[in-house]
Length: 343
Ligand SMILES: Cc1cc2nc3c(=O)[nH]c(=O)nc-3n(C[C@H](O)[C@H](O)[C@H](O)COP(=O)(O)OP(=O)(O)OC[C@H]3O[C@@H](n4cnc5c(N)ncnc54)[C@H](O)[C@@H]3O)c2cc1C
Image 1 (cartoon, helix red, strand yellow):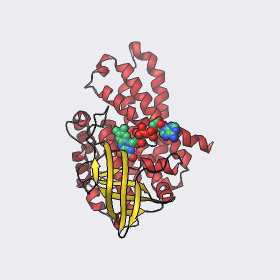
Image 2 (cartoon, protein in one colour):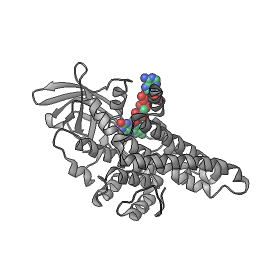
Image 3 (cartoon, helix red, strand yellow):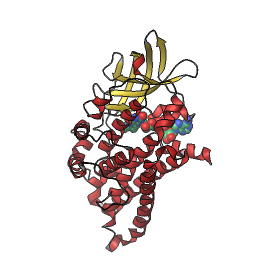
Image 4 (cartoon, rainbow, N blue to C red):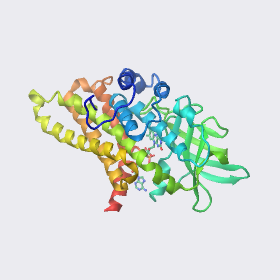
């Protein structure tokens, strides 16, 4: 987390209002009593969904310090705006920037495909005026009615494309959202596409590797931002409690704080020059962000004891939130695997 005098973080308009809004709503969003759409609309009304990269990092880091579900939804929305900005076709990005339309990024299979792990599962057939799509999206979030989903598809041969569709289009079947460990307010579920027809204007690109290379810095840095925000909040909660019997944990808090500061320094540095940062450095930063968040939330739970074990406590919510980070694409396994190929 950053204070007003923070030398690393950036500022953005309405910061105090944003922080207090997401802090107030965290428990309800976490429990699924309300969802993330109101938060997206609030940010849209204040013009905060399409900030430059360093300011978006600061925004998402701040929100994650209060509510990872909301930060994750903002990441998805911001990424869909980014995809459309890089598309070769016209787009409905104004609706997304204002938060009136929700964006869902179903791009995990694109990252796996480009890394050579697994081909994208949705198949596309050319038609006279566009593409016909069939296949599964095994996970995506922000799958609200009418949401705009961006996903990769596989054409015959080695060809790939990135396309957009709406969850309300004919042939799009969103499965009822399952109960989750966390993120219950994010409309996370799976989708089946059954003869979904999209026009040519809904094809963002047919150059999947080029597209992934272009969006990857923003994708990974904004993911690192929510790892960092969550870690910073846990460390702040833990640091004040390493006294008396818990003094034994002070060294661990110091080591984790140093690791967290290192992540933040690089995060804000890379965000100012994202196109010049080498891919392994981006992957390593994201991996370290996951690791520090998982370790910090674990330590917070240890130090808080029984109070943190209450289901309704912020400590236990953060512990659950951190459990999502290693399994979000690129997963910790994929990050380690990709990094090993650069060594
Ligand atoms: C609540 C929730 C919300 C999500 N929201 C989104 C979203 O908005 N957008 C999106 O794109 N995705 C989303 N995902 C998917 C997420 O990004 C990951 O793709 C997914 O969690 C990976 O888990 P899996 O079991 O589906 O994948 P798998 O790919 O089956 O991975 C399972 C494990 O095996 C490893 N593995 C993968 N491939 C191989 C291989 N070839 N050999 C050996 N090991 C392998 C992985 O690293 C991982 O540890 C979401 C997932 C969840 C749970």
